[in-house]
Length: 127
Image (tube, rainbow, N blue to C red; front, side, top):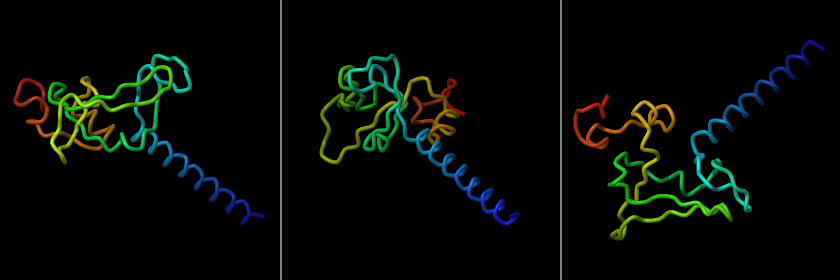
């Protein structure tokens, strides 16, 4: 009976680890989108998993970011809109949020930008 209890405890621990893994996947891949919700639901904010969107790279300089997301409030569809024409093979980057600090980027997304990418130069933008 003691061996059976140990096996059950081990299985429960494995399930907890799977839940933690799934939670981390959602947190690192989900987008907080405004006006979405899908299926005509209207809300001020929704979270969405969008497989192609999580591969978009970040650009802190909103003016230099070459694309942005738009959410259709009726359908919940997420669309990438290019801000300008792009050459074939040219990367389209988006600004994850203007409010993110370098620490936010590191903790939430696992990377930190070089100071030059943060708006170029001293003045509080860097570390």
